[in-house]
Amino acid sequence: MRINKFLAENGIASRRHADTMISAGRIKINGVIASLGANVEEGDEVLLDDQPIVVTEKKEEYYLMNKPKGVVCTVSDDRGRKTVMDLLPENVGRVFPVGRLDYATEGLLILTNDGDLAYRLTHPMTEIPKTYMARIEGTLTEKDLNPIRSGVELDGVLTKKCKAHIVETNKAYTKVHITITEGRNRQVRRMFEAIGRNVEFLKRISIGQLKLSGLDRGQIRPLSAEEIAYLKGI
Ligand code: URA
Image (cartoon, rainbow, N blue to C red):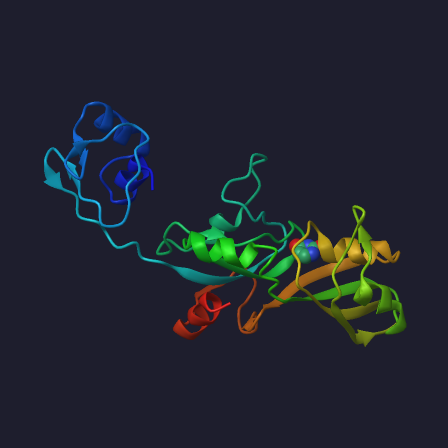
C-alpha cells in the first residue's frame, strides 16, 4: 500500500497532508526516511517523528438495502440526483454500493467498505446468480422465453445461458423470474428488448443466497454473520 494511503487509513492525515509530512522527511519506514510514493508492506515499522504508528483495525461493514427506483447507485451523482448514499442512516460508516442497479430498477443492493469482497462479487469470473422479478408489458408464454434462456445478442455478444420462468400472466402484463450470472449494462431490460418486449418494472430479489424479503423500499439492514461468511466463501 502507498505510504500516503497507509497514513490516511490510520487516521494520521489526509492523503495530501500525508504527502507534505513525507516530503518533510517526518516519516520513516523500517528506519529509512520514506520517499513520496514509497510502499508499506505488512510487518513494516512506520514511524512519524520517530514515534511508531499504531495500525488501526479497519472495521468492515456489510449492509443490504432495498433500493427504491429513482435513486442512483453511485457515491455521488454529477447531475445532482439522489444517490443510495443519501438513504444511509447516520450510524452507517463510509460504505459504497457493490455493483449497480439502474436508476429505474429497485431491489437488493449490497453496500460495504470491504473493497476485496466488492471486487470479487462484481468480477465477471465470479458468476454469482442474481434473480430479478421483471414485469413485462402484455402476455408471454414459456416458449417466448426460450431465446432469453439460451442467449440473446447484446452489443454483438451473446448473453450466457440463464434461467427464466413465468410466475403470473394475464392480458395486461407477465411477471417473470429471471436469474442471470452476468452483470452487463441494463442487461435484463435489454434481453427483453432483444425479443421485442418491454420491461415496465424491474426488481432484484436475490443475489446468491441473499434474499430481499422483509425489507421495505429504501430500508437497510446489516448482513448477519452467516450472510457475510457466505459472501466471503463465494
Ligand atoms: N438488469 C437491468 O436491466 N437493470 C438492472 O439494474 C440490473 C439488471
